[in-house]
Amino acid sequence: MTDKLLLAGVIGDPIAHSRSPLLHGHWLWRYGIDGHYVPLHVTRDTLHDTLRLLPELGFKGINVTIPHKETVLQIADSVTDRAALIGAANTLTFTANGKLQADNTDGEGFIQNIKQYTPGWSAAEGPALVLGAGGAARAVVSTLLSEGCPHVIVVNRTRARAEALQDNFGARVQVADWTRIPDALEEVALLVNTTSLGMTGKQPLHIDLDRLSPQTVVNDIVYAPLQTDLLQEAAARGCHTVDGLGMLLHQAAPGFERWFGVKPEVDDELRTVVLEG
Ligand code: ATR
Image (cartoon, rainbow, N blue to C red):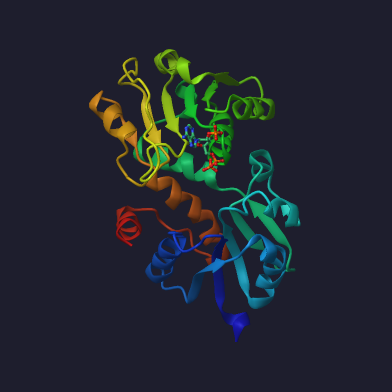
């Protein structure tokens, strides 16, 4: 009987690369839950109909990945404030009456990751420098501001995108050119790379870290490779570094809890499962 099954999954195009089935599958096994989490290849053409059909098939919710994270906001019956602010959703929940709620947990994943690996850290400690101005940057910036970060300097190849972020989030966002990175590094307590630079198969991230203080916490949201050049160079300068895998793991936890009823733990065992999967 499909109405007895606990079902959830992830939709995207392409979808085969997604690590979400691996990590949700591990949690289902670990907590002894009789449920399933499946990858679903859903194209733009079939997105709308699929989202209407899934609750009828017994799905409690669904994660969303490229290229649907923005489009689902138009289809959802309700959108959380943080998803609206970021302009994208990654976690959809079907309510008891079949309505579709869209949320974005990327920012929560980002901040939980830093907190887990940097005990005592607070965003209020000082300004942050964020490289990039795409969807991930929006989640990072919005969360840093709501966590009390005094101001966030955003640097992006396409300056207009950084300015759009400033328009959205206000005066606590400052836009700087790529060439200003060395100056900005002197004043920040946190450096975050949200660009795809440094990822396996992409171009390297070239920035001059000479003026990076050893007090600055450095986080890369790229997790393949786990120890990016940025993290290695920052660690060599004495900085505390946080890799990007934890963001992927922590952003998944709120959906799992909503759909399967257990607050899952993000621990080393889960990291190993996802890394070796
Ligand atoms: P995501 O949702 O993961 O943030 P995205 O919205 O495509 O993905 O954003 C990718 C980010 O990486 C952007 O900040 C992008 O810069 P642009 O806005 O100028 O495109 C940045 N990025 C990607 N490739 C880059 C490159 N070769 N050099 C500099 N920045 C790059």
